[in-house]
Image (cartoon, rainbow, N blue to C red):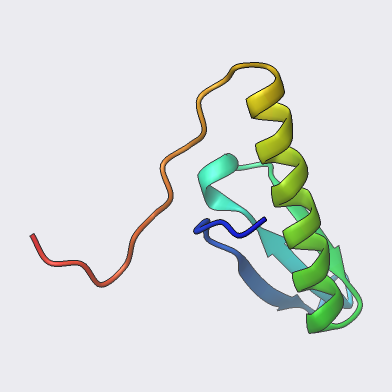
Length: 71
């Protein structure tokens, strides 16, 4: 499933891994990975689960953040 949600991946010296934030889903929605590729894969899996869960529970999905659009 393709989505247009933001995935922020940053290296953490403290944790010695890549930490991933999914900002549209809240301040505490994170995952991680030992490599950048693993972090991205984990983020995509978490997003898929979040979307499926929201749909099953008849909850509205958050609006994706869109960058680079002019008003």
